[in-house]
Amino acid sequence: MNFWFSVFRQTGRNLRQTWTTQFMTCLTVSLSVLIFSFFYLIYLNMLNAGDKVSDDLRLVVYLEEEPGPEMQEQLRLKITQFDQVQEIKFISKAEAYSRFAKELGDNRDVLTDMPTDFLPASIEVTPLRSLRSLSQIKLFSEYLATLPGSQKVQYGQKWVERFYYFTQLLSIVVLLSGFLLILTATFMVASTIRLTIFARQEELELLKLVGATNNYIRTPFLLEGILLGLMGSLLGLASLYTLFQWILRHFSGAGFLDLFTFTFFPPEIICTIVILSIILCTAGSYTSMQKFLRI
Amino acid sequence: MTETTTSSRTAMIEVIKVSKSYPPNVTALADISVSIASGEVFFLIGRSGAGKTTLLKLLSNMDKPSTGLIEVAGMNIHQVTGNKLAKLRQKVGMAYQDFRLLTERTVAENIAISMEVSYKKPQIIRSRVRSLLAQLQLEDKHDILTGDLSRGEQQRVALARAVANSPTLILVDEPTGNLDATSTAQVMELLVRCSNSGATIVIATHDETLYRHSTHRVMRLHNGKLASLTRGNEI
Image (cartoon, rainbow over the protein chains, first blue to last red):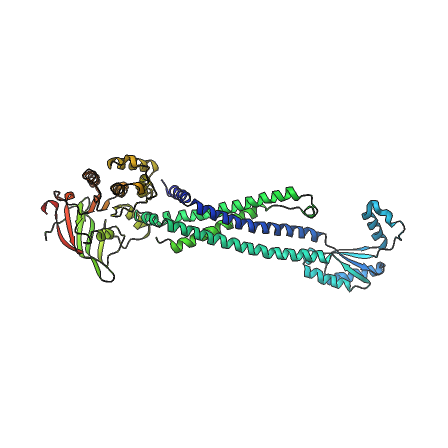
């Protein structure tokens, strides 16, 4: 019988003897992983959605008068003085009209009695991806409002701001739930291992007296920590995946969710969460062992 | 005091001027010196509180002497640590007065524990457990929890665990205290068998019948001091 066989047998025996405590700890760890990964998943999807939204982000500068070619060149120069942009597009009154008519589709009849120049000319500015944080966009829009002939600048301010604050809030929730995960994983596992050590004090003392090495006594507790981390995180992630599938099945097609493509964690993030959880639980187990295992 | 020396065999245990005191000023052992040869059967006798169990605890490294030196197989056992100490303990089997059995484990599991720590193969462990249980007439108790056994049965299981790993040194504290004559004979038979296969055996006992007519050396302790060291048949 080699070392690892003995250690695995010992671990199995420990788990059988204290399975209720171990099970409760496993559930607590999985719940913490579930809470953390739930918010993290929303956060990641929101960031993806934010990326998509910012792909379509354009600042529209409505002008008092339609600029001639010279004016257009001057405006282009002024805009690029602030920063480089991805694209500057001048929309004439006629073009604005035809776009609007196209958007109206079958309802374009409503435009029959309207003049074709009733919509203002505008400049559509697509900023570079590097210039897409909320504060930079705000500054840029304020600058564009100072352009000669500028009437109004629009970029869906309210929506962008709300989205920005929502992702900010989510990042705080993710941090908090991450903190909760650290606390529960380390402290719960530490206290479970401590209870196991106390419950088996007599046996551990005997093992020592019959010649068990420190590693023979300690390794099963470390394995318990690793197992709790592994099982807890897998259970948590499996629950989240089930919840994710349920949400997709029941809410796909509904307005808001249809705007974004929701995706589950990629394998590398799943592995990171599992490894992190294992590390935290093993650390909890190790702390208890160092404190309470007198060998 | 009658002095009896060890034979020409090499010493398994050397106890040199060993004293053990507990606070505030209780002297459990005072200035004990003795040499026990390899393969010898050695008896420790004396009234309760004479220091027999204390000496066994020092020999098994469960406690440290206040002064003096104890060597087992040429090693100062109180300076050995870590894996070396574990290896040494695997070669020392001890049957405790209070048995130290795991009462929520079966008889077989309790006996197997001393072999598991030295990574013996499962089939060897199973066969050794069955053989020991047969020798001690406990075959039918194989899967019984030790907590459900009588004191006499528990005592025999504790002894079986002490000898299971074929140790070179067996320390036994009151091995027959709860046993009838038949069980006592079985226990002694088992210990003699171990001795015949080369193990050194130290037995602390009140039971005169164990040593009275033997040629084994008997050390009498009185109030922690060596009162006499003589052959059993010379007492």
